[in-house]
Amino acid sequence: MRTKYPLILIALILSLSLLLPLQASAEETKLEIEVAQQSYLIFDGDKLSVVVTITNTGDDQLQEVMVCASTGEKKTVGNLAAGIEQQVTLYLENYAPGKNQVEIYASYSGGESAHKSMWFDVRPPEESVTLRIVDAPQSVYEGTVYTAPLQVQNLWQQDVSGVRIKSGNEVLYYVGALQANESLDITLRVETYSVGTNTLQLVAEHERGAAPAVPLKFTVMPANSAVKVYLASLSPATYPSETLQVTLVVAASEQSGISELELKALSDGVQPTGYYLGEQIAEAQEAPTVDVQSLLTGGTQATEEEQTDRSVRGRELTFDIQETSVGTEPLKFQVSYRIGSAVIKREFIVDALIVGAPSMRLIQAARTVATKGEATLVQLHVANDLPVEVNAVRVVPLSDIETSPSEFFIGTMAPNDFLPANFKVETSNLKDGDQLSFKLVYRVGRQNYETPPIYTVIHLEEPEEKNIIVYIVPPVVVVVIVLLWWLLRRKRWTQ
Image (cartoon, rainbow, N blue to C red; front, side, top):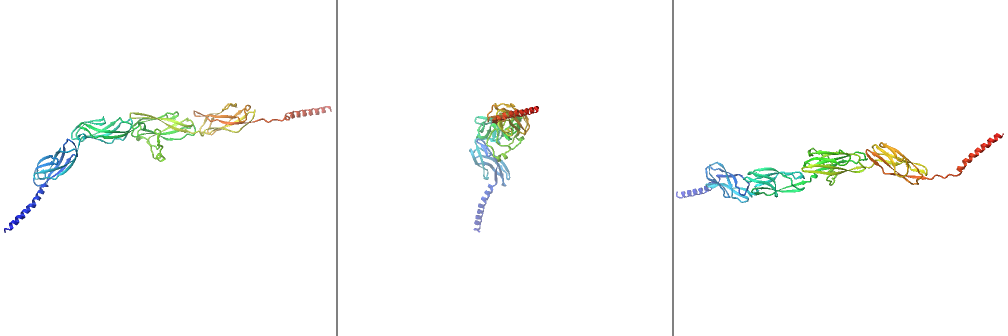
């Protein structure tokens, strides 16, 4: 019997030693903690508020409950009944600039919860006001105001005052005061810039300093490039009085805001003398396919494939040109418009070609041969190859040789008319091989024209020498006949 009790005592001691760790483990899981809310960014000098949720999952009330941080901050909760959940806010002040990692946990009389890790960033106070470019345009035309939508935000937990947007030493926008965590949308207007690439280093400055600069980059295009003029069609005329038709396309940039747009013809004889287009709204313009080489800016001629695929959005304007001269006729135009505060006037030239044929012709009809000292006839023909009626047609001799008439007046010739023009010329003072020159003068519409001179050669032949017998024989024959007649009569009388 004595040996039985010591064995029972030993077994009891071993059982109690195994149950004690299990009881301690159960006691450690009675309190749970979760980080419910926190800020991931604060500024040096601020308090970081951390909202945690603690839960008593055990069957007994927990005493001396406290929320703690590895940085040393604590928040006393007190007693926490079984099954109760409670939110507690802990304020952290013991941190370092830059990235921070802190352990959050809860303790109570007899144990503590599991540890939860949290991260946050601590920045300098001058960075508490941030600046963000929302959707700024990449380009603007000279003379217009560049506008950029921005967002200014106070990330600090306190109000700030004196907020302003600067570029260098220039204040571009004065914001004023911003409340804690307030965000404000503003529109920045830039009126001072240079043509080409512009870069502004925008800084949000306030009472506690200034944040790092935010670059704003945009391009300013010349105002005189906001409108382009293209040659859509131009066919060369085949005769001077034919009406030419020139079609131009005026294309304004869709983003430029063009107003007072006008196209004028500066050359005489162009109808109409101009078009006033006013405000050029891109959406309302037609989009014909035209030659992609601008008459204003020139540039490299596009390939045939590019010309086919390229569609220029603009307005088609047609001009009629009358009474032009033979050859290349430079037609001058002027385009003018307003873009913002800039007024643009630009001139350009369209070369119209008037070919010289068909036209009027002066033709020598036959070779001129004459006997010296005798009058001869120079025969010419006038041909109207034009498809229109020609007026005041006359052939004018150009040499000093006297002719009759002094000029040959025809008057009006219908299309395809073919008429003679003859001149009588005295040859007494001419030599064989002398030349006569003539020109044709006529009028088409209100324009007078003349042809280059044509030349005709006078071929002279000397008169033939006659035998003296030719002059003696006839009178002798007459005398013999009269004498025979007289003798026959006398013989009859004597009988």
